[in-house]
Length: 162
Image (cartoon, rainbow, N blue to C red; front, side, top):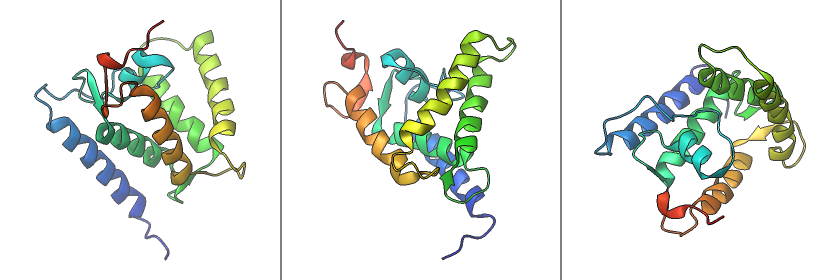
């Protein structure tokens, strides 16, 4: 079944609505989104990337809403999958948010190089198309790893011991 030209915009709106809904359910006043939207490794980076309402906890619904919004934002041509260019462009847009008011430096350049490497890793079947299915498989594994105590929420109680 072919998608209408407005379908990607509808999906983006639905993803944003889900994210806003997740944020609205918090007793903490809504924030403008994750504190560090470009991501990274470790719990601090995870929380900065996915704690959209900045309440110190990331539920699976909140995590999935942020991932979905990022995927949809990256799908510039609305074909339902991300090319390497789309994947890297979406990451760079988030990285630029972190660098607002600062000039790109060596760390920025390294992050961009790493984005290309990451695409080669996440595109499991090496067909040049990063699909929703590939993204959800990574999301499942990543959330489980971050939720060290298995309670369904990533928060300070999941900090790994050094």
